[in-house]
Length: 354
Image (cartoon, rainbow, N blue to C red; front, side):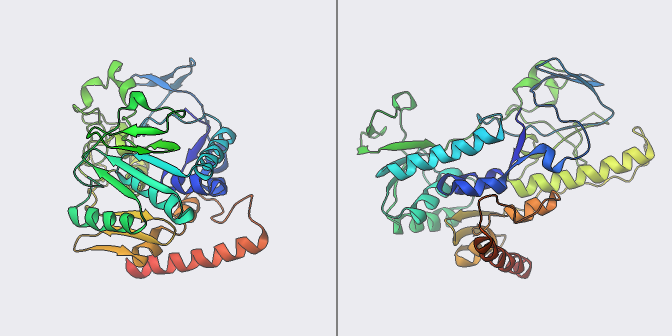
């Protein structure tokens, strides 16, 4: 639907540092140098074609569905970069900020603001009994203590009437009757899956009750030989995160190569199976800290922060896409040199810990 790819886990850093988005928002043409790029919405899929909203009919031998979650963002890269500047202006001009939602997005945004703007009064309103519902209680408890140590107010088991939200209103009341002031707010709530368009297609019976596409161990849509699905839109029982989506892509690429070499209907093709990721997650807490849920332990502080929080894997992701990992139009040569040295340390520690 848009002309660019966005490294989404870096978007919150871009709200406090808009220049960061120069590296994390990438035009598709910059990395996909061969092939066609059609900027439009898919509205139908048949056994042989995909139909787009603007009337394109694209024939395929193999299809990969990777529509993820629906996100209301600008279509053009320039407008997306400007949107980050606007977010940053709202943050800088506000003395108090409300964040609605205590999942990873809300927590990471609160931490980013608290680290870069320590004098801002930040309030998180979350309807659940604890933060970060998708990880264990130890990670959630450690994160709460970290936030409170930065004077962030966390209101659990409370909600805000979204109909009452406006930029003119400065006083908010929670479902428990508590009132507080906030000069601006940010909604960090769960985004719907971008699968509604499939409900009127031949794949409408290939989704579960949550709208996720049912796939087999080779990441093919159940019962379909030449249609794959990857990313958040799949029904794979694992934490939905960027790392897992990248692993999906690697498996599908290998299987596509096997099928292309052996023929689409080859029954003896030795295709690779995907194994769901273990329940691991790293939530960044500003530029230096993070909380990590690992198979045998939960760690918070600088060690997990070295793994993710400095560069947020942006350089690594750009390298995987065949791009310059250090590109940033806004950096001076001196600043660029400092960033390069820091990133080298991050990469070294990442390999040491894994």
